[in-house]
Image 1 (cartoon, rainbow, N blue to C red):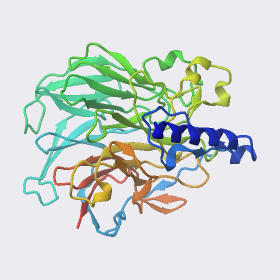
Image 2: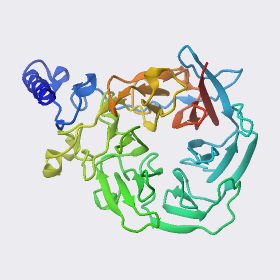
Image 3: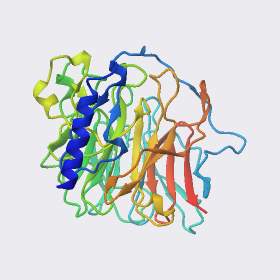
Length: 419
């Protein structure tokens, strides 16, 4: 009861503030359920749409040289886990510890998965083999029930698999057709199984920025889908998620979380990307609104019933940061503050006058819920406003407690370990 009263007090105070100040300074009320925890992220200052001009600002990707590496906080060491990869966008850690790397991109995609194995546990893989070739923009991977699953942009496939295999030789089975194509980088499809392996979750980004071509092409998109391991029983688990990419389970819970890349062209500070817990049947706003009931002016008057029940995301991560990767730290090698918290890979902005993202941030959690603001963890990807060394995407946690960070444009997987 005390918690409910605290939430009600916070919301009422926020509503009162809406009557004061100009539009850029208004404090927005948040509509949260009775089980939420009030944190510093529960209120959010949002400017008016088009408060600043929408700009295109793409830095040159120059790569890493002269022994340069990203920067981690004091007490951590950053080393190369693997390099000379072609757009290593995402990693999956198999139950036996093998690291599978999806090498894929928007253009000139390698369309393959490479397997890495660190046999002597020194932090550098001795084995490196091409595991599967001739795919179609692969991203999500999963080992489940003697199968290796791959989420290509156009569908989910599975292959017969035995632990330790370094090359797939069996025939692919396409278990689910997925809509392909789309705006910017929304070709990625991620995979995640639940604890008992009875369900698989698939993230599918929108085909557009804000449904500018109509909603017909958005069928089964901007969603997280749920299927059985054989591809049957498809349903929409959650919707209104413009481009959900990273997915993980909060440690100690059965709550699914995702990192969402929000919409463009509303100005420098709109709309913040976010991570959020995902409620079954929940609607998160896209394309009609953002951060709850904030109506997108380009969709004015549309989807009113959906907007009325749009869920406010849990943790904002900054506008245009391209927050894509997500992994909870479920090991004990890092200091206490990092345990059970979330690491997020921010690929970096193109629609902002000054660069944003291009780093890995950390959000502390306690008892499965966020308890603080995002803080920088891995930086040093930016040389200046016109040049970047690389762009982080996927995040994975190795069994030894170190962190892997996929730097796709830098062609490198970085390993971050505690001293």
